[in-house]
Amino acid sequence: MTQVAILGDTHVPSRATGLPDWVAEEVRTAGRTIHTGDFDSREAYDRIATLADGNLTCVRGNMDPSTLELPRTDTLVLEDVTVVVTHGTGSPGGWHRRVVEIAYDEVDTGENAVVVAGHTHEVVDTARDGIRVLNPGSATAASPATHETMLVAHIEDGHVTVDTLTR
Image (cartoon, rainbow, N blue to C red; front, side, top):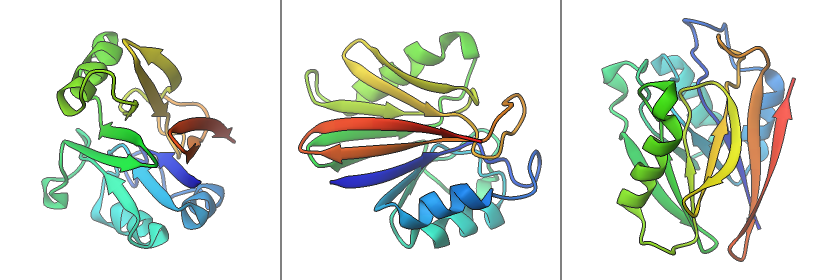
């Protein structure tokens, strides 16, 4: 079984002073970490990369400095599940459609797939057009979020269970 810490929209230092200790501990103990972008600074990226100890998959958010040179999307396979990671930049009104379209650009129809995206700072765990859609919210409660949130996924033999963590 693979345990995956899923977080995003940390916005350090523009909207938050740092990563909460409880989030840092989840990242430190996970087998893989996914960040949906909007680190907001090289320092925030470096902190999370260090905590993830080389097991970080991440993408560029609309608030990330260009010096981070992160991809707009990334795809990985964990225990027979294809995971597409994107930020989801754009209007909140078209967010679900947009992230599902990005997922279908990366996977074959019928493939066991999950798309992980951020941008809205709202926790999402739903399915659209045969794709499971996850959004961890904001790990630092960056506005407009009102709570620190993240997801922890457990992936085993093609099955995904997700816990929402909040403080």
